[in-house]
Length: 304
Ligand code: PPE
Image (cartoon, rainbow, N blue to C red; front, side, top):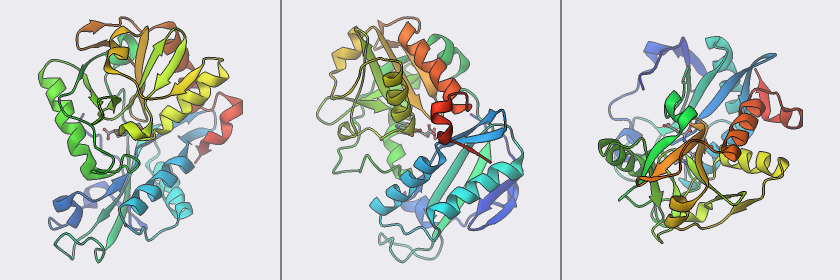
């Protein structure tokens, strides 16, 4: 998906022109992959752009950094302010927001501790992550031959840049085989998540999703969906699920900030079909809450 440039990028406390947001080729994170990032969306609301669950995303960024021994030279409040400012100056009604913390230029070798810690925030317009067709009719998925991280190989609770090599291997394998997205299993053989989304399965009116212990990221959208579903009176369970569950389920969908709520129409050529009623209900509830149209969760929408 080509990036549409915007006006300014926030780098280490200053707004710089989009084209001037450059780094050195000996940037530590480029070589060894230890950086942490977030994906956040701002939506158009009645009172200007609203950033969805900003505090939770920034908190996860700090948790990810802590796991990797990266000390962010700003407070959570400063980063929240930087994000609001970047959204504001770029003047978009809605956008995707990418804060990244990385280790900069000045050191080489595997000890990251002496490296300068750099922070940037960029925003750009980003449409349907898995395509409009996917949102409306569901995506075709394949269980990957690539296994999700063992929790003692890579910490699933961290959103680390280098961790996405695993996702990319699975994504490319699925795309080259003619599918839209991959579903990954945990090293123990349970369903884990997709390459950039959490996974949900609906069976007999119950919504189920795998736990972080399966190697899945603890998704903000996953939490939002579990909360909204409970409000709608739909039973929810977070538990280990077998691969066969997703072959025989009534409905399945995946969730993420970028992907929002995207239905799954088939898995390994076992057809689930057009998005079902619970998936549609969750999609609609999500579309409302992110745009500040659900009074109960107005505190999730941070107006800039
Ligand atoms: N699992 C993974 C592996 C993941 O990358 C994401 C977000 C999620 C689950 C859902 O998390 P949350 O956004 O908190 O609901 N993936 C981000 C990056 C996508 C990208 O291509 O870059 C995102 O959705 O912003």
